[in-house]
Amino acid sequence: MNVLVIPSWYPNGKDMLMGVYHKEFCEALAKKKGIKVNMLFIERERLNNPFKYLLLKKNYVIKEPGYNTYVRRMLNVEKINYDWQLKRYVKVLDKAFQKYLKTNPLPDVIHAEVTIPAGYASCVLGKKYNIPVVVTEHATYYKDFFNDQNIKYTEYVLKNAYFTSVSKYMLNDLPVYVKNKKVLPNLVDTDAFKLKRKKIKGLRIAKVCAFRKGKRVEDLLTALKIIIEEKQFTDVLLTIVGDGYLKEFYQNKCHELGIDKYVVFTGRKTKKEIAKILNENNVFVITSSNETFCIPGIEALASGMPVVSTKCFGPEEYIDSKSGKLVSVGDTKKIADAIWEVYKHLDDYDVSYLRSIADRYNAINVTNNAISIYNEIIKRGLK
Image (tube, rainbow, N blue to C red; front, top):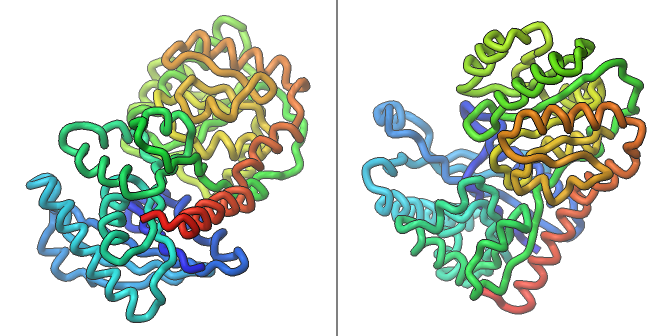
């Protein structure tokens, strides 16, 4: 079976984490017997420096473990005219696909990541070349695809693709006419986080996220202040892994709360480094307002650590009373109480159970689910 993955995002340029799960998915899929996979990515360059764009190489290939990523650059004029940009994206993708076919066979399935732009353009491509299309939604802003500007494109996708999402709650928002739908979660390299757990003295809290709006790291900082003051407890350290445009804001918040000595900002870390950090902590916390999935939460469970999370959708599907606690978004007192409660009952959390939840999302299970969907749409002739 030949599969072509077409992502809306790809980890290159400034943000090497954006869409990294697409790479890991392709790498895992390439290891499956009888599966040939490649990726075709349309890289949208910002309009802020059009002269620099003229000098950039427009087509190039990235050789990845087990597959190739074929990249075609285009200028992003979305701010000038949204519809025109999407129309151009479709044309550029079609030309890149024709070039791809010169050295590769016609794919049996196209798997697009995110409804717009890759999902829509892939459905147009699928119609033209008679190829079934799977679309997987990852975006936290997916509801924006149902507004006036996007709805015609979204409806086209829903009517011409097998629609999947990384969490069940997203499927519940779909129109009733959508019958071909299923959960296809993000793939997590759970084995990389299964280090031998060691006994940790004191409360050691970990958080891994991008420093951007919606992650609400400030709520965790406030909750930490509450624990220190209300519990009169100072044997505590919060380690925050990540980076982003709100870093200075979070650092200033620590200073404002007077908790600088209890917080460490590590910056971005590799997967191996994150696994080591998680193994040196005993409570993981998610404070987001909305998460479609939250891969770090699964990584924490794989490491054998219970998770405290806000009720931000995605994590609600894998956190239960035996793996952590769920609290309301923005309720810093409840977040503090949940962290303290989990910490005081750490011995009640079974590491093997936590890891069994994480393994639902390992490479074997996720790729098997994907292949099952591919076989279904090929057999049924879904176009």
